[in-house]
Length: 34
Image (cartoon, rainbow, N blue to C red; front, side, top):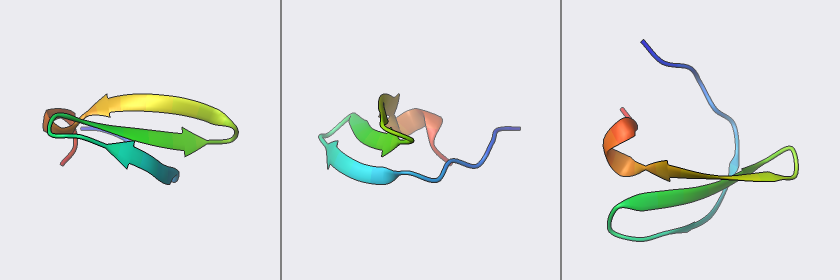
């Protein structure tokens, strides 16, 4: 029940991942990723 995201992985830590897509950065919690 989500959506597909194509991005460049810029960084991560224990709880989050930092993605860049279309010049914008998004911080996403790992528990939200399936």
